[in-house]
Amino acid sequence: MGLIEGTGLDKVYSTATGPLVALTNVSFTINEGEFISLVGPSGCGKSTLLSILGGLEQKTDGDLVLAGQHHDAPRRDIGMMFQTSVLFPWRTIRQNVRLPGEILGLDRKQQAERTDELLDLVGLNGFGDRYPSELSGGMRQRVALARLLAHDPRVLLMDEPFGALDEFTRETMNVELLRIWEKTGKTVVFVTHNIGEAVFLSDRIFVMTPRPGRLEGIVEVDLPRPRTTEVMRDPRYTEHVYDIRRMLGVDH
Amino acid sequence: MDMTAQATLPGTSAAAREDAVARFIAAEKRRQQQRLIRNRLLAIGFGLLVIAIWYVATEYGFVHRLIIPSPVDTFWATGRVMSADYFWPNVGVTLSEIAWGFGIGLTSGVVFGVLVAMFDTVRATLYPYLVALQAPPKIVLAPIFVTWFGFDQPSKIAVAVVMSFFPMFLNTLTGLSSVDPNAVKLMRSLTAGRWKTFRHLLLPNALPIMMAGVKLCWTLAVLGVIVGEFVGASAGIGYLIYAMNFQLDIAGVFSLIILLSVFTLVIYQLIEWLESRIIFWKQL
Image (cartoon, rainbow over all chains, first blue to last red; front, top):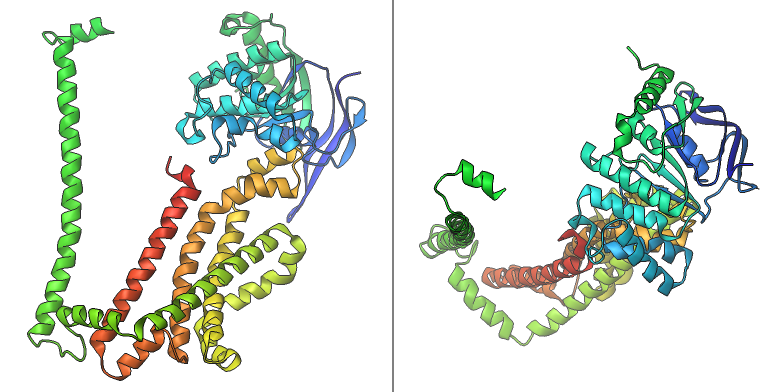
């Protein structure tokens, strides 16, 4: 019994030009503490699936169970992170990280301590009193990462969190994310269209294809942990990337 | 690092390079200051030029004094008007009308803006009418308001309210509606309800656009009161302007216009200062 179980999930949008099938018959199991990536081209339904997992959107049909309960609404044990940092410019870095605690009415003193620990964890010690506009894009995503962990959610849902960063910053953030994930043991569902990133990070990769959005297959990543950028020289890394490209039909 | 720099720049010591950088920065600062002074001088010079043309045109008989009084006449008229015993009571009347008109217009604009933005039922019920009401120029209501509310203050306040309400209403609505969808998703994922989303996200996010509305609201409240006083009043600055114009005291009219402009501008600056305080993060 996994932490999250989806069975025959469908999602249909009603649009002006008729019904649009975003997801069809998607079934999967996600275990506690696993790092899962959803990979696929635009329109494959990976962001829709993430929204459904977050309880922000309703499935049209199928079953979704989280920790033994039917799941169809936002929960405080799920955290979400987006492609943009979505920091509030009127709040300092520290105040931004404390937002989830304030919304959920968590203990103020504990949250204050936790905020300092988290800023430490993401390498932003000393930036707590700055404002978001004073930080670079990579630093802002670090703050978003700290905020994601603020209320200690069990499941982290990340929607292309490093998609807007340059290649170098993205790689650094990937390494940091793995370090934090190994430390905290969270269950992560990570959306990306970057195959290499998915292979580098994940235990398993859900490969999705568009029109209509389907789960084409699941790739088990056979690479040792803890991982450093060294694994990118591992022949198995290249092989996984190649396999996924073939599943997505992007080989020319 | 130093080694390579040394290699590519033979003969320059670290001290010499530092010195060059310091000199460059000093020169750059000087240039900036000179540009600032030049811009100030240009603006002041232009103002003086306009006054000079005004002076020559009026004092040397190119334009009749009854049409445009000279700057000197206007200056003396300002002193005369401000020391007259009828002046300050009339100022008091107009100021209290503006204060009430601005206050009510601002408050009702914000309240309706929030209600329409936050409640679908209110939006569905009221929004079409509020948009339709916004179409005609509100000045046409001034004579009707005099009929309804009389020659005293309430009719002027009413004109100011209907004129200043709409920019405040629309800017509040626009401000509350223009929000990053991901930020809304974030709040929803944190199980935040309507009120928490409003307080932590929508309201602070709307403040820049709302403050732009406050400035419009202020200008239009002043305009509304003066127009109201033109249409029918027994006291106030607008009434004085109207009366002096009738008596062909054009210099007096000019002085009142200048005084009113100065007052409006001072309050406008005050609002801008408040704005920079409230939405401090835009300056960062």
